[in-house]
Length: 562
Image 1 (spheres, rainbow, N blue to C red):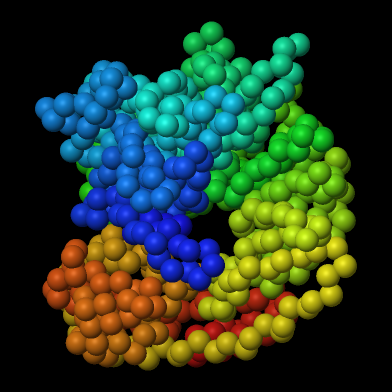
Image 2 (image 1 turned 90 degrees about the vertical axis):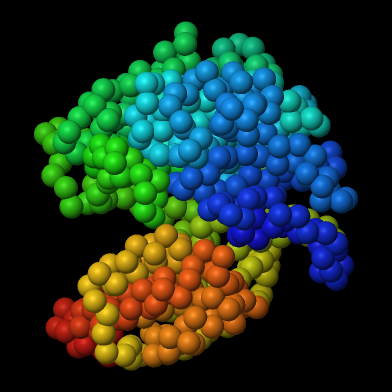
């Protein structure tokens, strides 16, 4: 397993004893490790996250017995003056311009890694570039390999075999890191060993597993950044109107940076021949801002949410976010059926004809007929359900296991109810009632800092704290709401946690390597200012859905007081 900070651990399965520990990333940079470990042929495979910062993506292979790094494949080239690690990096460097290595390059592989035992290839998807804006990261053009690609390397040596770049010179944060599924399918009258991916871009891709040849490329949600793919070249036909780098006004892109398919896994049924894709529809406005490369994210552009004008006379743009479960024919590359208005959640199919899918908003696990999507049962989870379930046999009996938990959809500071739930046919256990929970009230000290200090604190908070403690509202994080912390009254107590690591055993590690007392003082005053704002504002999430209109004011007042 990996920790968020990039450490890889091998544990004794019988007693949890740590057998070895290896740091897989450069701790001086903003790398994280959030993906699931892959295991094959005595090796452990893992990528990393952090492409929005000044990082250079790579995939590592570790020896399963010792934890030693056996090989490493970088997804973007480094500084040419330092030499290239292999011929693949030399080839990739010819597709970059400028001093891209000073900005990081990006290319994180934070999810999709698949081992193919037929070809002995490790297949992995590569993320977006850093900065997002290609005019900044590679002035003068270039495809920027291996960004937004599926890459195949020899699993034993890490030697490059093939790649397919889905979007050359990509500029919209359309990572290509979603899971990669392998299958043997009859395509155009011929049996093919293929890899399939439903990517963030809204496109489904099928490639030959041996060569990377593009076989299919069709959109599974509405898109406006391309009109399709040229099968002769394998490249998309880019809609120039969607290229914000060529315009001065805000440009609406569909899907938005949240993407059409994220970390929630799709599944494939060999019985129905269908893929089941947890799809999202969204849009976002991008604005070219090449000077905007520092701060919380390394972007080179600006973006806004729903508060922008739509130049959409034909009403074809999705406003906000909408989720669908799409049953997809991978050979015909078309939708067979879909379930509307289902929150994003991972899918699992079984040989018994079941389709299992998490329903985040409904706090349930849905069981459907995999053939036609008929709902068979909704299992109460008491928590949001995003991850994909697994199924396994134990002593001749089949089980379904599902990890649940996450920020409350209502945003009322409720516990996450994070846990592992296991189901079986005829199971009789019942979930215990939800625990009553009362949040600590707002009680910040008087604000004494200047506006400049608070603004500086907001900047540092965004760079270092917001990933876990949510910026601004701070209410929907799965970690403590810092606006309510009693440590706001004590500079010494605050620093004891943030710098000295007083709560390290509970997951709050020391930030002394990247922050000093001046920075933490600014952070504390920013949080104090946010606490005062929250005390005098209604809940940003509105009243719970079961509150009568005449009771809204009373509920909002209670929310503020609580």
